[in-house]
Length: 280
Image (tube, rainbow, N blue to C red; front, side, top):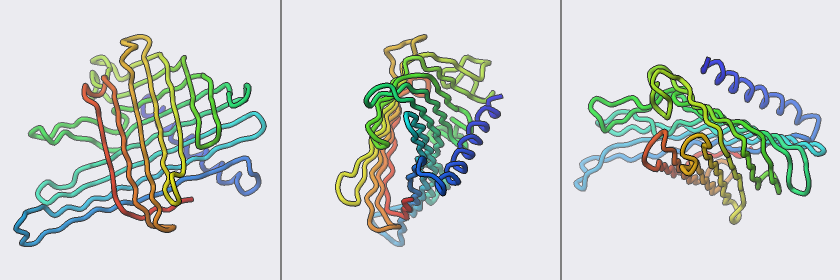
């Protein structure tokens, strides 16, 4: 059941992209922006007295927006994909990034910059994750384990495609896991899902800091009314793209997650590199 729901969401996202691409040719109601980046870092040593290990790593990222606007209706969609691998001599290949996120936000004009809204958000990863501090390594995650699905009505304040805030006080959140991870990520032992009902707040803000340098902020906050409402989940992404030319850029990405059901500690990830970056 969980896989059917998730594949349905992925299928809907794919159809929306295809439909949007076809619509662009005949109307200006659709607007698409995004970038594909591939960052590579490498170091090698030979007879280096100071020491060091040969390493190579690569990160592939896709950040794609396809938004619709006509009259008093707006429909904003975003897909984020990230996957990275790192190989250190003696340690083998390990995953450094793995993320898929789809967000869809529908708005109908109310007054001024405000609209009545409804949103859906889905997040998961594609491959297994491990804790390498244990011997043997311990499996900590897998495809759809966990998977997060959130949806609900709310109010949208939207100044532009690059600056919007959505407040959804009647949000349903479903955490999905496989049998292997039953009892983890807030689920009860023997259960594959956890249902929460609460408040969701999201902010998207993208701006040009200076010529060829853009900054994007993506913030999501969630409070579960049914259990410990003061324990607010936080998911914050900060992305810098420093464009050198049409194809080369320096990218800096920060990602912070606070979620007691996933970890008692604050999760933090940073990726920095020079690579191929195609803006479309």
